[in-house]
Each structure stands twice: as structure tokens, then as C-alpha cells.
Image 1 (spheres, helix red, strand yellow):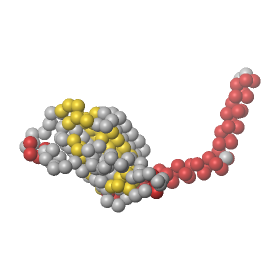
Image 2 (image 1 turned 30 degrees about the vertical axis):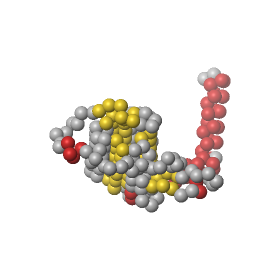
Image 3 (image 1 turned 180 degrees about the horizontal axis):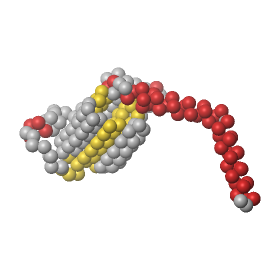
Image 4 (image 1 turned 45 degrees about the horizontal axis):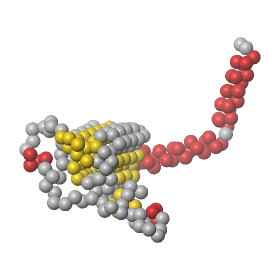
Length: 210
């Protein structure tokens, strides 16, 4: 072994030794474990889950008692589901697919002038995501949104408002760009719950995701 290789190994050993005995490394590990526990492990026990639900270990949940996932829902890595602290619920129909890094929030801060955003009250509105909905990577679904059965939402879209069943949705803000053929033999009336609703229940313009 050359002298250069021997010195390189010795430096790597010292670096390893330093990381093992450095108390800051253990403090950081405790912080990581604490964050993981309160953002995933503990809340996951209180999420209402149907049969066959799969959830990535890197998904985050807030106010899990107001989150309902239907049978066969798949939540990918990095997804964030934030229900409201008081009333805002997130309800997901069966066989919905969440791509990586999807965020769904049922609450947002007001941002009136004169005081910090985080000091202002939150607005809460339910989020309803239908059956067989596919949310592409990086989609954001804002409070008050309703996505009908069978919709496909393009990657990176920002969804706000009501969308009829089997729509193909894309953009920021999201809009209908196409239609998907229904895969199930169902009556048309069963698929028009959102279409026939009188008024969109959407958060007012002064709200944001906070």
C-alpha cells in the first residue's frame, strides 16, 4: 500500500470517528426521529384507512383524524396531506393514486394587510377527491377543491375549485384540457354529483396555501 493511500484511509477513519463521537450527530438524529414520529408514525395511526391502502414511509400527515382514504388508495413518497385544525377534512375515494410530492391542504391562512400571515386565522374547507383519481407528481390541491371520479391531474398542477368526473386537468391554475372515458358501466347520474352542484365551494381570493 502506498503512503498516499494509507494517509487517505487514516483521514477517512478520523472522519468516521469524529462523526461517531460528536454529540451534535446524536442530537440531530433525535430531532430527525422526533420529526418523523409527529409527521408520520403517530398521525398515521389516526388516519381513517380502507382496505389495501399503501402509504410511503416519507408521507406526512397533519390533523389525521380528519383524513379518510378509501380502499386501494396509494400515497407515494413525499406526499403531504394537511387537514384543517378544526373542521377541514380530506376525503379520498377508492383506488386514487397520489404521485410523488403531492400536497393536499384543507386549510390556508388569510393574508390581510397589517399583521403577519401566521398570526391570522385559518380558513378551512373540505377537499373531496373521487374514485380512481390520478394526481401526478408535484400536484397541489387547495382547500375547498372537489375532483370528480376518474380525473387525471397533470404533474405540477395547482387545483382550486370543482372539476367534473373523468376530466383531464392541467396547469397552474388547473383547468380542464381533455376528457377521459369512464372505465366502469355506471349510470350517468351517478357520475354527476359534482357537475350538478349549484355553486363551487371554493376558498375566497384572499386565501393562500400559507
